[in-house]
Length: 183
Image (cartoon, rainbow, N blue to C red; front, side, top):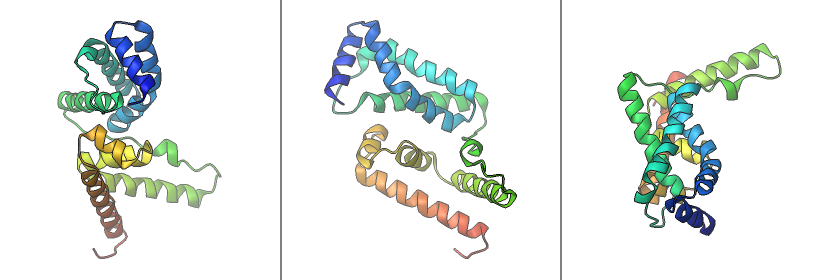
């Protein structure tokens, strides 16, 4: 955690509303993306993200700076809230990748290829464990290094690298099988 963030956390623990506002501005976009990726619904993602920051305000006094960034704590809260959300909803959905994969050139062949690739990626992601999906999201969507992901997930760097490797290998196998290629 940076010295600036340490000061913000200390101010927030002292009840400074401006510090909470700054922490929100710093971390809300990242937490929202994480939650949205997991629930795939704008309204639910906004509600759950808001609840993450309500809990930050309510529980900031419990946060201890042990070399772990505040963002790691916020991700933990977000993961728990998403888990609770699915328990209530009794269903699982993931981010529809449509928005990022829409063809922009009007070429129908490329558009069809993009749709097929999206479907294959979603099917491959569905074969992964929740931890594997989280590692891929944090590493590739959020562009975080393995050390930061390890802190966020409360695991060793080696465990994160192993999860990432297994996830990518599983996706490659799944996508290869869909092409008719042998394992």
